[in-house]
Image 1: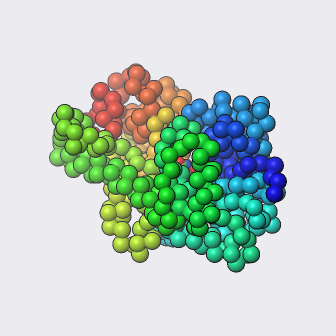
Image 2: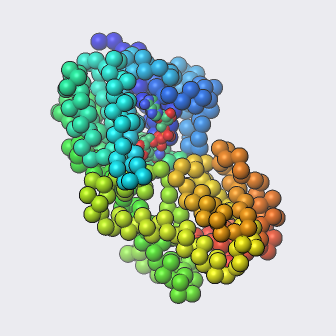
Image 3: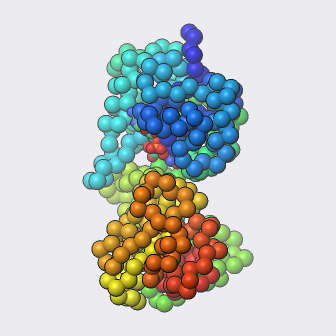
Length: 398
Ligand SMILES: NC(=O)c1ccc[n+]([C@@H]2O[C@H](COP(=O)([O-])OP(=O)(O)OC[C@H]3O[C@@H](n4cnc5c(N)ncnc54)[C@H](O)[C@@H]3O)[C@@H](O)[C@H]2O)c1
């Protein structure tokens, strides 16, 4: 059977999908992208990656020039592609329930364009059992298509490098699904590791929940030490000094973004709300915001103060604001302080952001929400800077 494209990434204009398509285009495959976001597709077709992703833009320009990348906002392109990679996941609602309608609707929309000879790969983080559910859905719809779950495990911003570097877990539903997925990833010469689908789904969720708990440990230590008036960055340095067993202990800071909290909640839902470590991590990581505001309130009369928040992305050197704790901080401070000003050197999607020098000039107190490198060498005009990260030499001591 002939296909125009070797693979098509559904949701391919996004953070997971676009780097994936580009890496495979670079490896010589003809890649396609199906995405509903027309404006993102327009930017991509003009050679611009719509978000920060190291090394992605040169690959995009090359793929476009070599005609190895087709873009479409119509699912028809899925029917022209042999391997269909779905990056649509199972988000979590406000009551901690996984939401299946996105993936269900996605499959229903793709159904007219799926046929024998194709291969289906699930790439996003999903609720355990979703791959088996998809396999059932394919069978019930008379579609004899091999299926595998091949989770994304890279760190956003370094996807291009890490997709090729980090071992790829493959959870084939059938031996054929496994073989097809292995063949796909062979094209980028990445090491592979075989699990069954539910193991692969857990592998992804446990990885993210573990990282989230790890950050919560650091944040809880920080809050205990700071409450006792102890300078935690100094203490941490001492604890880690030439002590290999603590090498992996991170520093404190806002642990946020579109994945870690969501995936911990997803696991908690699966564990019938008995994932106590995960639930504690959520309270600790989300609670760091309130902890900082409370400590600031104890030191200053916030009603009389303008607070400047530095860094609105969810992590350093990135432009993505999804689930960023800096926005939670902004909301809490808007309730408590006279005024709140915000700035970020990378974020382009928030019209409320102001230039850094204006925020410094017009604020009484600054708070480092995200330690972008640029803040290291900034003149804060002698204003106090609250820095839970321990990133700056001089801080307000909170
Ligand atoms: N960002 C990460 O680092 C990361 C890592 C691992 C897993 N994930 C998971 O992968 C999934 C996608 O994450 P993302 O960061 O790429 O999100 P994103 O919002 O950047 O991208 C999703 C893309 O899918 C498109 N889309 C949504 N529904 C669609 C549909 N039915 N048909 C076609 N296109 C559709 C959107 O327009 C968007 O461009 C999420 O479930 C996320 O949890 C993300």
